[in-house]
Length: 221
Image 1 (cartoon, rainbow, N blue to C red):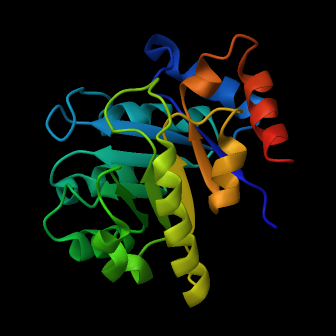
Image 2 (cartoon, rainbow, N blue to C red; image 1 turned 180 degrees about the vertical axis):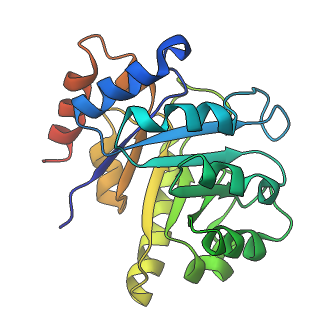
């Protein structure tokens, strides 16, 4: 079985030393970095622009994911691909023409992914599953770090896992929100391949390497 992917969200990082934070996360053993891009409209906060991401690209060799929690993401996907993000995640709820937006990401050289809010059923993206490299199941409501894991979303993970396996799709399943050593094994058992952890890594009292080691131990790796 492939190794689980541990992806660090930098939403709660020290923004005055982002490059140093990325170096530390790479040294701690994470597999990728997620940038939570928020526009103040789809979600209330405003976070990173593409110029910030681009400015940090040279600090690490880790893959970058851009999680676009923004309305009309099709207008911004090129900027984040140009900034060095390989995987571009758009919300099913944020774009009118989801199929077109995901196709655009691929056409621009990115890897398309789609995210679902807790209240959005899998049925909303069934028609685009052949287009995506990853489905992101939100296990918190998007917009803020440090929220508690919504366990009911694991049934959605199981549903997507059954669909992907039955059709032998080349599509990963990622969960985002509230992931810690205490619940990551349950999420893996439901069929998750990749795990976003923000405060679970960044706020760990023993530091980033200990946090990553705990997450890997919890999934038996």
